[in-house]
Image 1 (cartoon, one colour):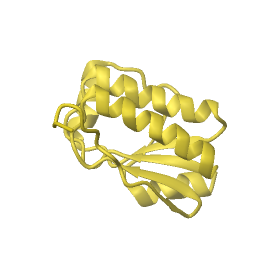
Image 2 (cartoon, rainbow, N blue to C red):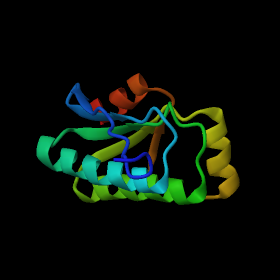
Image 3 (cartoon, one colour):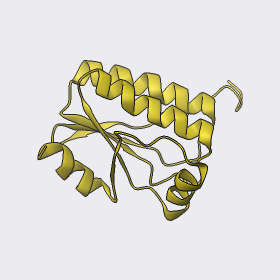
Amino acid sequence: MNASTEFFEPTTYITRDCLVVPINQELSIKNALHIQRLLLQEVAIKKPVGAIIDLSGVCIVDSALWQVFYQTAKMIQTQGYACVFAGLSPAVVVAIIELDVNTENVNFALQLESALEMLVNK
């Protein structure tokens, strides 16, 4: 498989009955959609309290990539589970605000531990 067709495979794990998906590299739209499919399958199989998408390894987000992340969170919520984005860098926060993308009904936490607390104590 050449580099253009390889997918980033996140190592998901369960902690405190929450599914955590650390994203520790920049993503193409194709990779983000791949992660979206994997995450939705994981949620359906593992039935966690909620999911945390940890974006602490992501430094660049454009409107198209954010749309995939946002849709992923909405899909998880539609399945009946909570979803929290954690670990957004200052640059990603600035990009989200400057791009004026949709963040309606999406939860954010500064770090993973705060996201876990949000989900476990909801």
